[in-house]
Length: 311
Image (cartoon, rainbow, N blue to C red; front, side):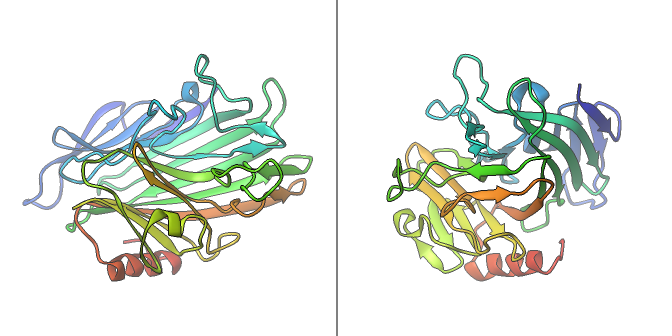
């Protein structure tokens, strides 16, 4: 049973903007979903359904409604827009899912959920999650707090994501597919954690990093403060916080159709062992921009995030 706290009535929650020149925004909310809408357009939606195991954002869209995220594509149906998934916990796979059952070897269980939409069109979500083998006790828990800022006049909104993980009464081994040069390694090894799957687009996605524009093959596995995927107008940047473990994180990047994917993969170079009762927290900012941003503008947003400033 999942404990659910909802602030506001279920269903359509209209909230008139205080700015007369703006269109009316409104919330769409249920026990498992919270969406910010602009007229008939869904700008962003957070889905936290115990039946789907892993909570996720989809769609993430520009303010004119162009959807940027990809949900459950045929090549990797366990990819869910913007989401978090471990690869291996104590050797058990929590990432891939059985195509018939939709379940992973390891269980990612949502145990509590709280949505708080606000009149200014920002929102907070709090999730409690248990990780455990099927039918067994939890080996690790997560407290996840997500703040989504209101869209600004430049067509930007931010998702500030904090996940704090605590090992149970025994050590926890957080692993990933080994890298190609390691024993049993693969050329696709290294991924785990916060992940973003983008829609294929007629215009190729371009990659920019905190070190400058880059081809994905050159940037893959390298460490950056932030990485941005953009098309002609909109895009999504992910910012790594300086207090995160192994900052600046190596990035897992794939930018070849049909798979446009990126992740700050802090396990890329090596696994992580948590001792019994030990905690580790990760903070990221996901910056969704409806219009082109310069590298200096993205870097300014990263600096604000790093210093604790919320627009």
